[in-house]
Length: 333
Ligand SMILES: NC(=O)c1ccc[n+]([C@@H]2O[C@H](COP(=O)([O-])OP(=O)(O)OC[C@H]3O[C@@H](n4cnc5c(N)ncnc54)[C@H](O)[C@@H]3O)[C@@H](O)[C@H]2O)c1
Ligand SMILES: [Zn+2]
Image 1 (cartoon, rainbow, N blue to C red):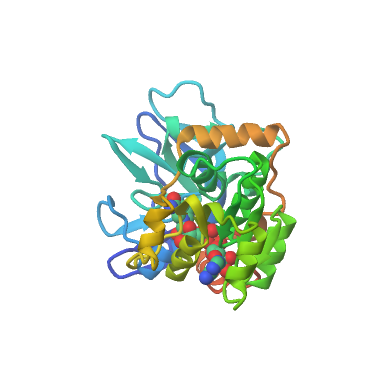
Image 2: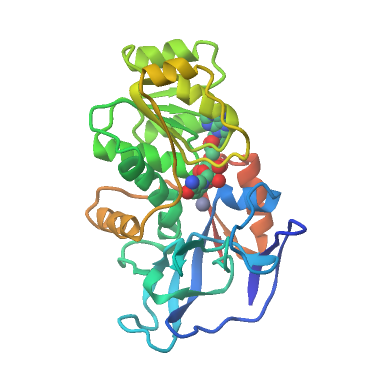
């Protein structure tokens, strides 16, 4: 089968022929129908992000995966061949949470195997292209907002980076009633989509009037919660400076650089908090599928482009270069 493989030692990525895997005990095999391209994949290929638990040097990328079950391993109950499903972006093995497509083979491939308890059935009305990125591009901001930040209705929220994660964060903050929602992105097209997804204000981080505009938007109170969905070091400092009393900055974007809080005394005086965030819990994904079925959220605007798996390297280049201003590019084997 075809698979998009990264050699992490040499940071070479190639779509190549590999043996088709079989479902082992407790596993199912999926004929992959759609797989999302995340900026974390770009970070992996660039070598900034190293898989912490990978055995060996090579891995099939892809942690956002949906498809049809085509093989069932021994001891698996409650799932059937032909069932439309998506895969949780990771699984627990011996107390360690491993990430699919990072620590073990993922779904940028014609077939992918998965532990049966990481399989989530899909409603018929939810297309594979829109479902595949729920684990991660939707569930990670959801978990960051609801569990890590515990964002409150009627309280100001700032979102830095209106890409795959941030565009969904705006929609989800709107859903829980956070207000005002202030979106920040250097790209004009990203600011426009933030407003379209429900942000009240959209700011350019390089605008010399940024601090004044942030203050005006929050009526001088500052942000109750701020989210880094960009993975750019400068964001963290600007976001920290935009917090109000008791404000929390949640770091979701991954940037392998020292953290810098320039006004440490005020940060303590205002009892502000800096919180790291990673991934989501399985229940976040199932809750989001339910919210979709209830008509509370929808993802038709989120699929910027569908590309053949064979063109994965080009999809990665486009996301890194923001070519076509993608929210999510989806690969189709
Ligand atoms: N912690 C986690 O669990 C987790 C999960 C998934 C992704 N990530 C990380 O989240 C980040 C975002 O991923 P994505 O796939 O949404 O990326 P993306 O490329 O789709 O979006 C990033 C956005 O940030 C914007 N941006 C760049 N510089 C900025 C600045 N100075 N201020 C504000 N915005 C700026 C870009 O214009 C773009 O719109 C990445 O670092 C990724 O690795 C973390
Ligand atoms: Zn991701």
